[in-house]
Length: 76
Image (cartoon, rainbow, N blue to C red; front, side):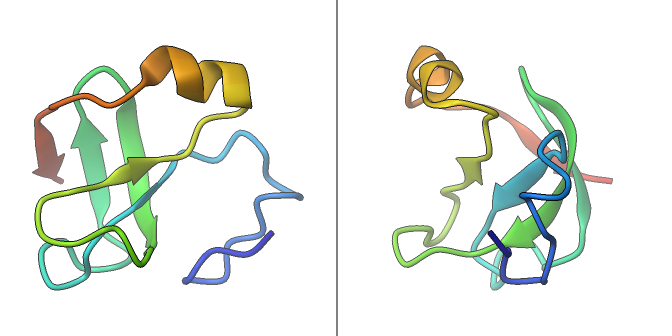
């Protein structure tokens, strides 16, 4: 599985990647996400517009536990 920036998530399953709207957060930016930690803005998505992000989780159960949240994001 490759991200929009070409990160291979199959080879790097523990990578911390978020999907962003590149008009808001430039692709490749290092970011801090409240409750998640540091990550790379390395992917995009058709539903990721404006201030919405998508946080990559290691499993479906982790994603379900994370759910939908309002969090603070800082570009580092």
